[in-house]
Image 1 (cartoon, rainbow, N blue to C red):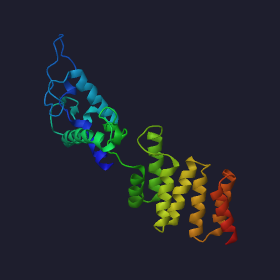
Image 2 (image 1 turned 180 degrees about the vertical axis):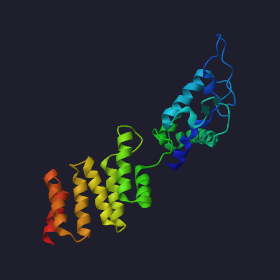
Image 3 (image 1 turned 60 degrees about the vertical axis):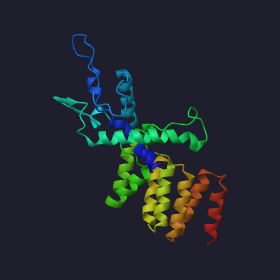
Image 4 (image 1 turned 180 degrees about the horizontal axis):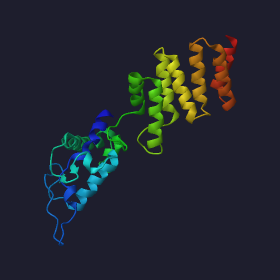
Amino acid sequence: MRLLSGIITIGIVVFASTIVSAQAPAGGQAPPPMKNLQIIPADTPRQQVIQTMQGFTQGLGVRCEFCHVDEPGHQDFAADDKRVKKVAREMMKLTADLNTKIPAAVSKSATDATRVQCATCHRGVAIPRQLTEILTDTMTASGMPAAATQFRELRKQYFGGQSYDFSEGSLTTLAQRANQAGKPDDALSWLQLNLEFYPQSTRSYLLMSNVYATKKDMANAIKSAEKAVEIDPQSAQAKQQLERLKKQ
């Protein structure tokens, strides 16, 4: 999947050459031919190139200037000044190569096989990373409060889109990792954050019960298990955990 991630950067630059000349000059003259097309065939119709570029910007959630020289008073879409434009060309090559191999890998025809595109990995963000990785790095560098703030900000900006997984699974995964790493307090912080958005999460309360048990805080372990049973009376796991805790 990381290969796919990189692949997608593909789109952003490859043709830094062409968008700028998309507008026809005054006087009704035909626009000049696009310059410096290195991956897209040079004879590709202008409108088709522009549509392809628009697909790149949508897939990565960026604007033209991310890869192209497009500044007030200085616009040169054909220039190769930006590193990301060169990276995009390489990603385009990787994508094309991968798409030739996918049909055989999945035993499907080229028509039926799913094709890799920018959005396949980027999902609307320029640098495609899993939410759990982003939050883990922030917690390690700046602490749990900063990670919680970052989660809220990312959720506010991207919730409802495909960029990040804001389901309760992301934070419960982080809680489990923290508990396994011997950091129960961090685990509880992740679970409390999850309950902020999923107050009826039986899984969160069950995990919280386990974490409290790890801390030898049996009162809160039982209380959390009771809450899990209250939310989901049909949960055999919650009932068994509560019964087991009460016997200790």
